[in-house]
Image (cartoon, rainbow, N blue to C red; front, side):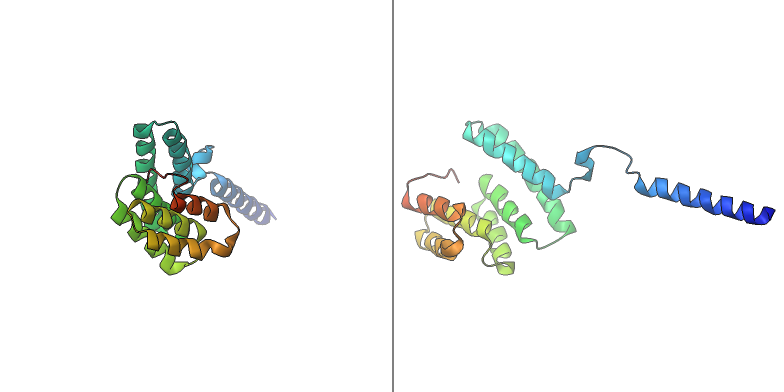
Length: 164
């Protein structure tokens, strides 16, 4: 009888300790639980706001941090089109059009109709004066009924200017 109680108590103790250690992350912060990709997207949104206000130095710092996180994210889980899209975007925003195009094309090789990649690659083509290629990206977006189509259409028409 005593052995049964002792064994039962021992098992209960082990299970309780395991449950507490499995559930503990060592911190309560949401940022600890966010992926590098999610952190990068947050930085990109902040950078876009700085860019609209003309605070390009601050925007570029955010883009640089976001790019580093996206590289880590892509190393951990390679070839995700959304990650490659933002890698292309941040790289392009930092002035490296060749590198940005490389990431966009990698993403399109995986998901040819990716809306974001097609829009941003089209913008890159406008900035690098390859109008015919920008129009090709627009044609891919033609049936999507999305804001990205309208945005790229305006940029191609010269109605809206993209910094790059």
